[in-house]
Image (cartoon, rainbow, N blue to C red; front, side, top):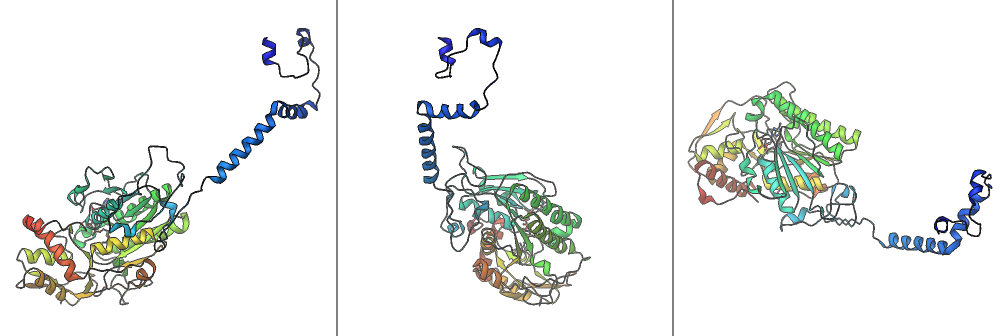
Length: 436
Ligand SMILES: NC(=O)c1ccc[n+]([C@@H]2O[C@H](COP(=O)([O-])OP(=O)(O)OC[C@H]3O[C@@H](n4cnc5c(N)ncnc54)[C@H](O)[C@@H]3O)[C@@H](O)[C@H]2O)c1
């Protein structure tokens, strides 16, 4: 019985016990004919063919990874993970419509671990611009990790997201390396106002250079798309007006603002070198003066200065003769531009600013109209390296990103005033105008 169970020799008789002692050499052709006999016997060949046919049918009928993109955004699926999202009416404009039908990029996601939206890091996300960006990303259905050392940022700017499972806050200095798994990195971490970036200039340049290197290294390692928030300061005191992205700038490399200006220029260089040398998908935004709710109240930036001074019934300080010009962009316009840039196909750099040009005296007049017609103006000597003119040429962003600012100064300023009034006087009557 036992020999019947293990015997596979067909017509050949099983070996007799004495044959074990003197084994005969194997016939060479048996190694070829045996497998063929094996296949032909007991309809094994039929089963094999049927198996091949079924497998072919399954693989040809299963749809391959399909991606549909909005024509305007041409979203690159390299950085996206499929899933549902909870869109607000406004944020749907920037939501890349994509559908991923089987494991994309990172392989199959195990059942029960299906991701929702994108995973996004916002460095400097507790700051002025960063916190508004976080609001939009969360509203779009993404999962957001804010990385901030709270140098100029405030927990209050993001605490309305505490308790949301799609929001995380990490206290971390970008000068130190960090490992996270995300699809996109918005790199904003850097003090933006002269008061703050001049406070510790070596730290400012370290944040711009080492911090940017760390985040670019992370983007390379995990294959994430990386957006750098550079600045119009890369144009220095410009000899070309308005400034186009092709203009290389007129920057003092050894002045008191150089830690910021040259720091951002180096950050741009690093981004481009990681792009060319390591294939990292980078995006560069050159941001012009931006204002809005959640700005630091006493940060020395002209709009926040004027608004806070007028509210406190102090004279508005104008440096120099007040004829230097600036353009002022409302923060929601900027956030829209940053998201379009991130989702679009173009590396940049792109100017993102409002071309409406105002002299400091004109700005003071708008603040008087909005807050207090009797607010006084006080002149002070101009600060070192303060550029005389600044006005973006936005035509590249308009053409390639379909973006242009929409909120005029006279419309945006009251929203900021209402937020400042609340924070300075604790006045709740202004209502919550901090989020858009
Ligand atoms: N607001 C503007 O007008 C303007 C103009 C040009 C460029 N930008 C750029 O936009 C970005 C955001 O500017 P903002 O106006 O929101 O400034 P902000 O100072 O309000 O925000 C910067 C954030 O970065 C954080 N930060 C600073 N150093 C850090 C570090 N080493 N590690 C981790 N976090 C750090 C701060 O705590 C803060 O939350 C900056 O990169 C700035 O250079 C802003």
